[in-house]
Amino acid sequence: MAKQIFINLAVKDVNKSMVFYTALGFTNNPQFSDDTTKCMVWSDTIYVMLMAHEKFSTFATKPIADTKANIAGLFSLSTDSVDEMNEILENGLKEGGTEPNKLRDYGFMQQRTIEDFDGHTWEIFFMDMSKMPKE
Image (cartoon, rainbow, N blue to C red; front, side, top):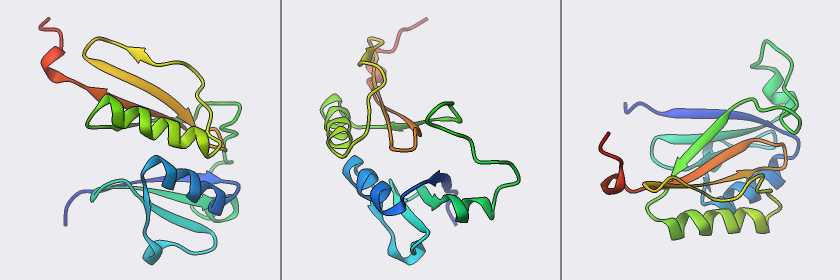
């Protein structure tokens, strides 16, 4: 079995969150989804599990962080082009996401940030390794 990553996020409204993540380019896997959890697929090895707070609490040993007020983690997704990065961000903004800061251009990498309804922060970026500084 290939190694996979599952990012579990506590969300207040799983259906609204599913629409948002679909706009970013994720697809729903109904086999691992129900009324309390939506399995969202980014690739063959990357999944985001959107869980209602009640469901998430059954797995957690600590209180759920208020991610609208505090950062609990930064999640990054690579894209194949600047255009794809911009399209993902614009689609997410149309579905109610917020962009807490503007595009950051590091020369070899362009990066934009989007937050979902619960404040989970995603860094969407394109990296051109041919422009990577030699030093």
